[in-house]
Image (cartoon, rainbow, N blue to C red; front, side, top):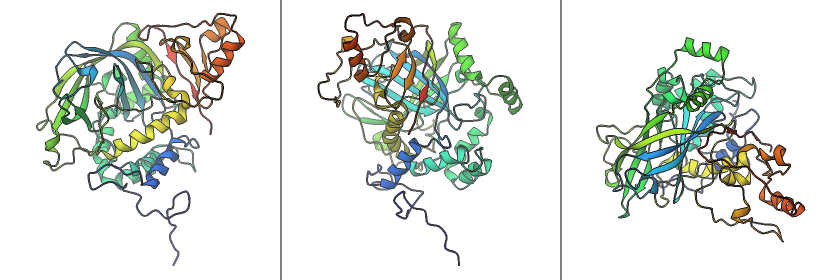
Length: 445
């Protein structure tokens, strides 16, 4: 009898379980000792042949969050501290299964991610245009992405691989139903809802915790294509969503979303038939109705982000909290590595990633080097036209205008010493100005 091949790790050790990660109890957090999970996530972050980058193509815009309802009894987040509070934000949309050359009107889940620039640092909410996801355990996530991307043998998408995975993963049924419904083909980024999807936590001034799920309801109305309409759009324009968002902002038709939350007291965990930290389940609105928080508007300069998206450093409340959600816990660790892999070590210095307050972090500098003072760094609004992810080099719009290339900190110091006699000029623009910027990323391994 022919012996079946054994699934192994990269070091050749047999894999005992490829479906479930190691947790501290049935609903406990992930454990760092699960080296196989860490290995799979690290490998997925670096897969380029065939291309398997998740959220590979997208569009983004700056805007503001305006608080319209007081929820300070639940949270100490500075952006939600009082009615009328306005916080600058960065909203990014993206495809999920699509690659860098994918058409915007293809049937797919859409990424919906927000970054709020608060006084306490950047606060990120990362989700999709659906309230649930295909898997609940991060160990299955790389395998799921493999089925959505091109097959290494044929270099083509494989519907057989997709349906094999979905049919063998019953927890994916809810998300598949949404994907194959009308909402799988939204007419534009402006006409879809956003969800934080994961279960996050709020901490109030009394150090009490409430579990929370985020909802962003479009105020432009839900609009979707039929299969025939989408096919017609793709035949003539592969950037329909990008074009729609850009042109709407240019003419002053700024899109808005109503921001609401579902709040669950910490004591309610375990009282329901469903696991509140299960990413494949929703919280019934009858149990936890939506509470309005404010309005999210997108109005600033718009940027295309091919192959590059924000590093996911999530700060859920006034302080970091352990999260029982398995996929969320894995993304907290894995997505930060993905950002560094795609953008290089200087990813935190990208304009979209910099917090309001200058960060204080330890850095390794070569002997004889000194940190670059804040007044010598680029201003907040410098328009980045190209970023080289591997060596930290970047070229700005001033390169052709003044002949002064703004490179990485290390190269910039060398540049300043060489041209100490000349002006060190740079252009700047307000973060919410009307100038278009783009980031083109190249990655090599």
